[in-house]
Amino acid sequence: MARTKSFDEAAVLDQALQLFWERGYEGTSLADLETHLGLGRQSLYNSFGDKHALFLKALERYRRRVSDPALAQLNSPEAGFDTIRQFFGRGVQAFTSDTRRGCLVANTISELGSGDGDALVRCNHSREDMERAFRNALTRAKARRELPKTLDVEATAMLLVIQNYGLTLLAKAGATATQLHAAVEALLAGLK
Image 1 (tube, rainbow, N blue to C red):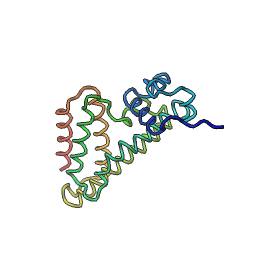
Image 2 (image 1 turned 90 degrees about the vertical axis):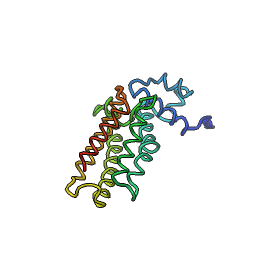
Image 3 (image 1 turned 180 degrees about the horizontal axis):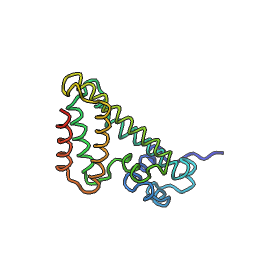
Image 4 (image 1 turned 45 degrees about the vertical axis):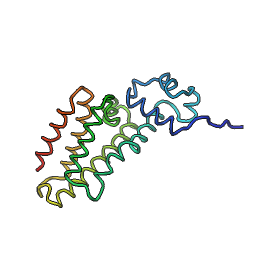
């Protein structure tokens, strides 16, 4: 007879996500996961697979629980130039909070690069989501004449993604909210 799980998988996955987000993939050992999640190694393996499989599930969860909601306003029909400014404002506040853990996607790209193809695919999906959301908001802003008609939407959307990932990494290195807000304003002023 199969044993019934005595834990909530979603809650455990949320805890694993937080641990990977704080410590990174390499900085999180199986022993850390066991201690932090309150599960034995066998329970972890039975429910999630190995550490790498759990990490990939955490990346997907981050996309659904953190990234997608953050991009929702950029994807709304009302989105425009001010929405982009607000997106960066919320990002700077989050990146410079007490934890300074940054963005799990940017952290993973920085930590693992192309050395982990499965993680990179997931990170690239998140990056593409962000680029698409910026493209949507830029297109609307351009149609409303909030931005010049000559603006290259594709290149600018990529530039904004680069800015966002750069902000998160600089915040982790100790840049202040004031410094990051100033960098955002300089970039946005250059778009007009």
